[in-house]
Length: 250
Image 1 (cartoon, rainbow, N blue to C red):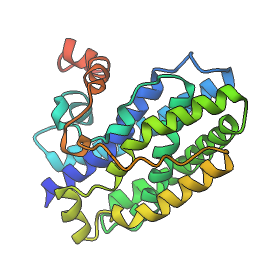
Image 2: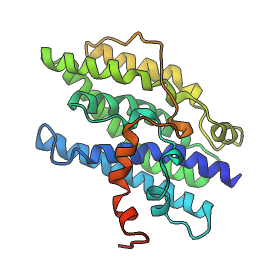
Image 3: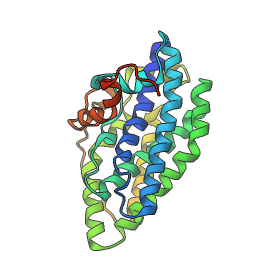
Image 4: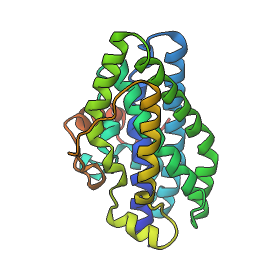
């Protein structure tokens, strides 16, 4: 039971960890000061949620494991984040498209996780849902602003949506630990969120004067630890201090 809960926590928290790391790369590089600070704050929100999840996971793991061990000392195949969140910051349109496609899912997920039979996961969801709700509003507004903006912004926004669309279906892939936790009333049945997700995404894209991609081919693998080439570069930065100075403490 503890093993399944531990793996389930990783499948949730790793998304926030990796996306938070990606957004952290943008600090000082936003298109304007206000947006730069907003993206940095979203990154901090996600990393704060990650800490709550990993502190709980460390208790379940035992053996004096810490949240830092879980965050920094795993190998690439042990991370359970979806492929979407590891995609690079190609340009601002990609940053917003990636954030939007994840945020819509994340908000639907947290709404359901609040009712988990696991009191700790429920508490984390109830605490974090206000932040996630803001993230979804922020990214949705930017999709509309860019999509219904200039000819160039519309082109770049559509390009990003088209390229990242292939990673959306993985959010609704159910892993072995997911199945175990759903049966216990602890996990969220993500399949049940799929219709609402695509309806919401379609609504926002329509308001933004953008086309919904027609592609039916989707990529997956992140939930099973099989990542894109981008993941290794993310981890080389994320893990540098702990790998270079083992057992370092602040």
